[in-house]
Image (cartoon, rainbow, N blue to C red):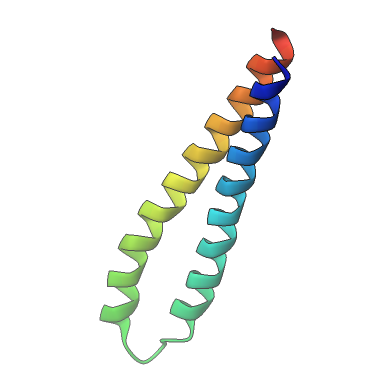
Length: 70
């Protein structure tokens, strides 16, 4: 079941990369201090990306745990 551990690690890294992307987008949104409507619209998409990234990272960690248990 070593293949599950490897696949899980790759999926987890993809989730962490998504979280890094969230951080970069949040920093770019913070620079838009003069347009609060653009910040609000950008935050809606950012929340969805953040939740998806956390979900992907969780699934990857779950695969790693299942691979280790089996």
